[in-house]
Length: 187
Image: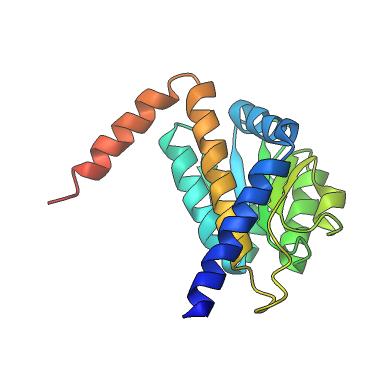
């Protein structure tokens, strides 16, 4: 059972470190890009994909044109049509997944703003992105796949969503309407 407490403590420590050290100007840059974007396309694979799906859903509930498809080829196709009015939001624990980087480069070459979240300051994604939040942990003790970082990245996405709810005109009303719709599906 010490593994359970240890895992929870690692996540809590990573969240505390992120809250203490995050550069809020990076968050502001990302929020500004999202708030002014015509279209937002999420790019993520592996353990980052569910986070991208959730973020796209939440931003859509605010009235933003945000989409995510789990197929990495479809992600690549979706970003090739972006331009300077659009955002490609990349979520990648390692920041070095080939398919994710290819899509990010395609989006950048098309003129879109590439923004994202990763865990590694020296990842190739940092060379492509216009704005990036680097937070998480190296996850080397248990395995390479993101565990603790996934919690940090999800929390950052929730924080971005909360700021957008305040910043985007009419977002609160659209969020409330979406909540009513969701509640209508409950017994």
